[in-house]
Image (spheres, one colour):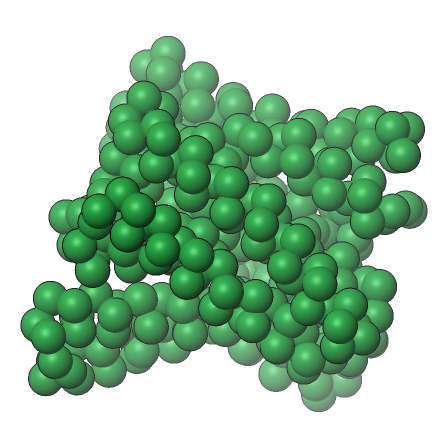
Length: 315
């Protein structure tokens, strides 16, 4: 198994070196902080949607997605979320803080880090599965988190308008739109015109390195020392407990090997930067969120290859 671990470490290491490169570029002040926002927007609003459109446009040629994947992944999410809220209770947090803790334990960096890692480690056959998980993660987890925070702050559900607006915002998400439109084209069974295909290929080649550098640049803005015990506790649930539970759920309902591996690998991804944005929006546990993002991302450089080795993934 050690040889398999080294194989996946060599496979994933260039990806994490790009993350470190982004961190160094900001820490050494080779780029201004405002470049992070511009590059992040460019990646999220254009590069990643274009790449996902390109990948999903071949949907008709890919194996069908087993919809039970939603049961395996989000069933485990419920358990881990409850554990996260319980952890928040241990740290004596209010309802908003507990929600931030819960969300941090299940909301992974599926797009900027997950898509490149899954594509490199499992191949394009796994892309429909992670695309489905991305859509429902954004749709279910983000919306339910907003609802939970609003309920905790107002003690009732009077502000349905804000919750409804958050749902509409999800449906306008560029990544979600890229997946949906690409899948729609793929279901027609028609190939993209050659010029369009080559253009999207060029964009796809640029997407992965830029996305990973942007992740590193984002990490450079967060503190490692802030709320370290909370960050370590969140990271443990996110990148250790969550993938184990997903594997148990997947085996119990009988998912095939490729789908199981894609689910487990997605669950093992580090905490999403969006969790910090939510913590900042509601002014609660920013230190814990930023630390969890940093710690879980750094630990993932070892734990993701280890997870792939334990799963016995081979090319």
